[in-house]
Image 1 (tube, rainbow, N blue to C red):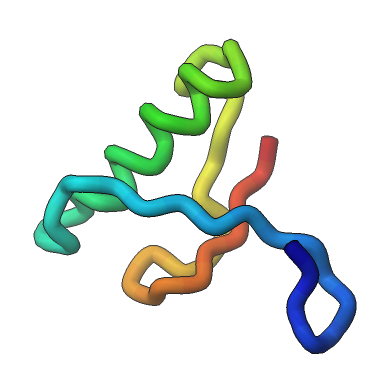
Image 2 (image 1 turned 45 degrees about the horizontal axis):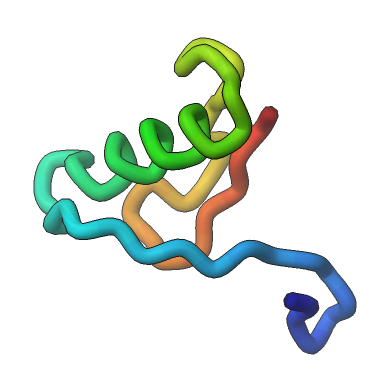
Length: 57
């Protein structure tokens, strides 16, 4: 998908609640399994408390 600014993005829903970083951790687990990468291969760059997040792979 592409946003209004022309930037590509991936829309993901996780079951973990957005409490104490549980949703962010769930997102990292999902991405690491999907991309077949170790957890250390992903970093949450920005958006820890927001719906829109920037991940470094």
